[in-house]
Structures are given as structure tokens and as C-alpha cells.
Image (cartoon, rainbow, N blue to C red; front, side, top):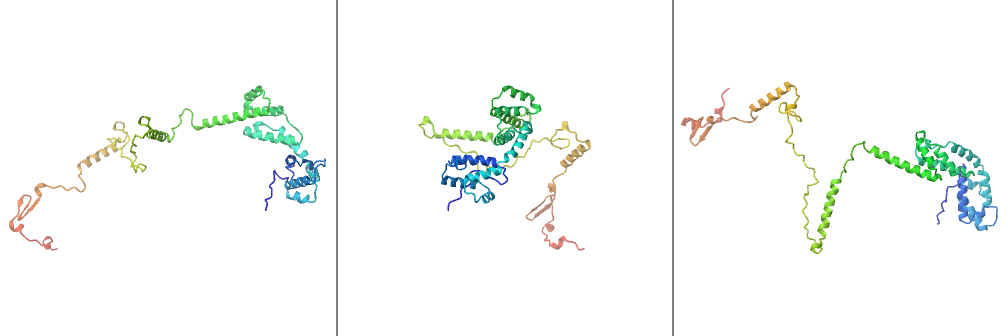
Length: 334
């Protein structure tokens, strides 16, 4: 099953808003297919051309219009009925186009491209209604509607005496792009500051050095083009990419008066009562021993030898040393 051919351009709407553009597109396409004689008063086309022209016109009509003109079999008759129905749109479009042209101002648009689009939209509508504007009129309207803050710029453009509107609009578009680039460069960073270095500048330099070493390794004309450089071992181990533990900083500046960091004793501003408390703490810390230390008196050490027991250097009596003690001997009766 063959697919239905898609329309070549926009179909004619019932609201008759696009009749003038549709009429122009239809005449151009029929002329390109050698079917223009089928809709003119000169009846020189054959039955095949009339059928092809009628099919092409109906394909570019709205469904309601196709149903309304279903009984029309002649393309010339269909073309005439559509013209009688929608040809009065020129009287509706022309006053609005003339009003838009009289009130067109460059200062009312945010950019030159928006103004250019609106201007050519008005020019096209006037041309469809039979009114053609010259380049002199376009230049006069554009230059005379500059903003009041651009009086000097307007005088400079007027003195250049542009011959066509296209020359003027190309200069305006170029100037607008340059001004936008200038504003972007100005807002990039405050004036007087240098640009920050690139994040991967050092890594790119290292990669370039490795590439140069590889090229030197592959070819050497002094050795007959043979490889002679042994590849160096990499300094990067398997755990190179892993996070390293931060090193402890031992040379941290600490005040000897109050014990606080990040300042010296000669610039210390700590109140005196805090300094006295800290100094007293240091003195007490120096006198106090470790929490689990045991002081041992060598003179009180008890030595136990075979059949010879002494306490504090004084030997015990033989009957005491050789006495056998039980667990109950260590507890008194309550």
C-alpha cells in the first residue's frame, strides 16, 4: 500500500489567516509542475493536467473546505471560488500592516535581530497587499528610531550613508555581538584581578613530558633506529591513588604563658588570672607521678631464697621461715 503524499506547504485554514501566503505558495508550486495553465483563464491544459492540479489544490485545503467544495471538478472554478471568498483579506491586513509600520521603533526591541524580524514581517504583509517599501524608507525608519542615549551613534551611522538596508543591519548585528562579548568578559571577574590557573595545568605538563620520553624511547638515529632506552620504573605504587593520612604538624606555635595556639607569648593578650591557673597546672603536673606508678623502696624488698627469708635485710627466725601457713591463718575471728 502506497503512503499518502504529505503537503508541500501549510494548508489553507478556514479562518483565512494564511490565505495570501497560501495563494503565493500554490501558484509557485503549480508553475514548477507545469500546471499553472489549469487555474488561469487560458484553457490550454489537457484533462490530465487539470486532474493533477485539482488533486494538488485539494490536498492543501482544510478538511471542512474539502467537504464544502467536493462537487467542484474543475481546478479553475475551485481557484476562482476560493479567491472570491478570501480575496477581501487584503483590506483587513493592509490597515494593520500600515499601522505597525508607522509605529515601528528600534528602541522598543531588546535586540537588533528581534527588530529585524518584526520589520521584515511588516514588509512582507505590505508586499502581499501591493505596497513595496524601498531601502531608503527602511534606512530612514531604522536610523531615526534609535534610543535617546545613542544620539552620537545615530549621527555616525547617518554620516556613513549606507546604500542598502542590508548593509546597515549587518553592521548593527556585528556591533551587538561585540558588545555582548565585552560585557561577558567584564562580568567574568572584578577589574584588576588575574585569571585563576587551570585546574589540570600541571597534570597536562607531566603527560606531555611522558609522551616526549616515549618518543625518545622508540627511535634513536644514533643507534640505527633501535630502542635503547630502558623504561623507567614508575614512582607511583599501587596505593598511589588512595587517600593519604594527613601528617601531624609538630611545629605549631603555642604560647608558653597561657598554652593557647596561633600566637606567641610576647603577643599574648590572655587575662592574668587564666595565665596563673595555667602556670599552676603546669607545676602540679610536674610534681604528680603517673596514675599507675608504684614507688618501691629497695630497703624494704623482701628476698626469698631457699631456706633463707629476709624482710628489709633482717633475716627471719628459722621457725618462722619454715612455718607452714594455711588460708585460715590470714583471717581473724570476727
